[in-house]
Amino acid sequence: MATSKKILLVDDDIDVISVMQTLLEHEGYTIITASNKKEGIRLAKEQKPDLAILDVMMTSQFEGFELAKELYDDEDLKRMPKLFQTSVEVFSSNNADVVEMAKEYRKDPRHRELEVILVEDQKTGKAGVDYRNEEGKCIWVSVDGFIKKPVDSKKLLPAVNRLLK
Image (cartoon, rainbow, N blue to C red; front, side, top):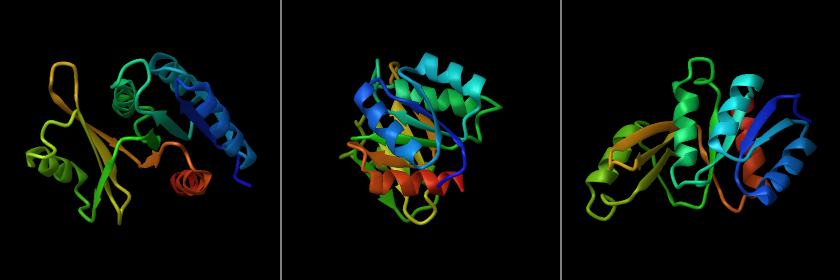
């Protein structure tokens, strides 16, 4: 059993929250839940969780990314690991410079127009999101990994344990 570390789950789908909460509580984690960015930020500041697991799309297609960026930009919360749940394809390679990797994908005509590019280095686990905001500007957000939706406990638990060790 894990120690009583706190995990913030932010997802607008109550069924996803329920399944993940059950899985993680069974492993001994304390779970805090929120259904949107505003509530997630408030709880993160109040509760100081050890990990945040964020849905990508909630009330807007960028809400999860905006939440991750706000957490990263907050001096007290920036070091808290952030794990994204997503059904969007994640590009992976063995390039430890994930920011550079995202820039390369943006130059590729097949990927240039994507609203969102998720990248992850297979060796180091470094990951991030390059997304276009409403004004069309590309924004980079560092994250600590991705979990494919629907969430598989055989992948979720090792990822959570890796980030909380």
